[in-house]
Image (cartoon, rainbow, N blue to C red; front, top):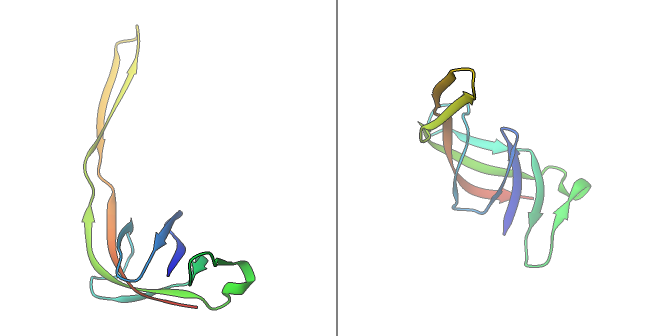
Length: 103
């Protein structure tokens, strides 16, 4: 059984027991969430429910922890203009543990 959910502008394929990193959520660690933006659910191999068949479907998850991703270095450069700039970025994330899928 798996579901496709949308959170933080991205889509994730999740199954019960999975841990995923999503865009930072405003709740504290240990809080149980209901993710209602379910795009598709598969109960059995070969079966896929989408659209109006998913009225009331939700994914239950628990926030495990918050963290920051690896540092990404960005180097900007314009030739012949003596312009060089190096900046870095670390994205905040929230780790979720999926506890169940309700259809």
